Length: 498
Image 1: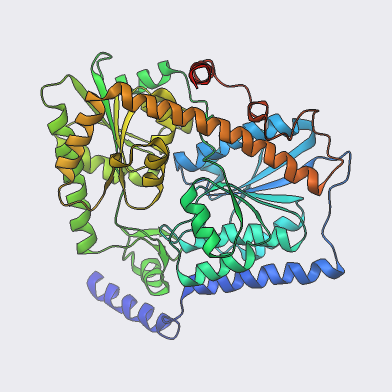
Image 2: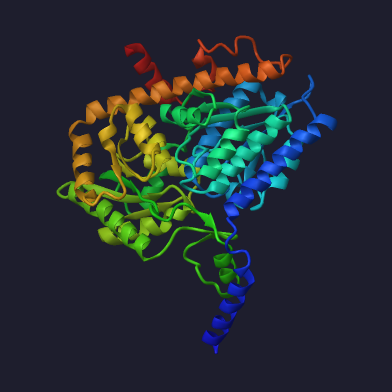
């Protein structure tokens, strides 16, 4: 009976979407966002939106990928907010931020109002930005199709709407990579009037090919302050660490189920029958799935596990599988199962401050998460990247260590992981020097970005009450909030030897 009912419901769902199954929902969302931007542009001519006036706080909307327990996205924004509050002053600034789920960002982003982003967002975006004085796009994977066109469409929508209303429209430390032609067209059309600071040279070139002028900056997570080491130690001990063994952190992902795409037919079937549950992301959005994806993922997990096990053999090593996004839990569990034991520590249980505290206790790291690498670097963790796109190779190139960017689809991944870990271990002083110098350089660049931000705001609002001395790009260190004692010592040490 149950089987017959499921079959009937499948037929109903198939029939219901038959007339629209050829619609490209991503393109439909882009068209809706473009229409929203054009509406804002037209309305601006006869009914201008509010502008900033001296004596009131500057209202800025932060547009990013928060509310998904993605540690990287969250730490970027947390460090950014600290810098903005330092530069603008709390009394002069009123920040709001988009979140996918306010419950998952509860307690984050002090002094910032959280606005829940609907799944279909163009109308909401236009209405919300009308009440702001500007937008700062803060997602790392800002312009790319690898994860979800919808995310980049939201970024473009925020920047494009603000620009259409003659407001501050700033992309702060984002990355540009491979894009579908439709997304390229959207970015090219609506981001030309935005002020873009990209986080690496490759992104400048991608944007330049689209006719968008951008400046070279960096990621914004470098100054993030985690919980004290004692917090990470307690978490590791809860998971079986003896407090003595060297820690090897492995950060796996579901490497082959991207991008997330909308699928009306799957959405209808899922709603009616529960089909496609494993690949369901949210609403009508689904991960890429199927037997081939499963095969590739198993090969990738085997490679990480076998490589880590071979390196750890004969050593006193505690292995922790760390999921920097809640979606990584299944990959972490598969890795530990393949190893026959180890800790599973995931961001659905621990917040951003705890997560970074944990990974900075590692001696070695193998990571497919970009921000696991970035946030471990201030702690001098000897790290290797295993990548599915251009972000980790760009980071390793900046470190002068391009050979430490491995590929998720390498058929000899186990050997590559083992050899890379042995290399960073046997050349620890050299590798750590490159890591620390890159960290200090990026912190300085983040200070430069702060000075440019002051210049951008001052150009739009000359009467904004910045403190004297701000806005000089020759003085980047004056545009950073106070650094933690360990980070300040690291900066001081390398500036003296520069």
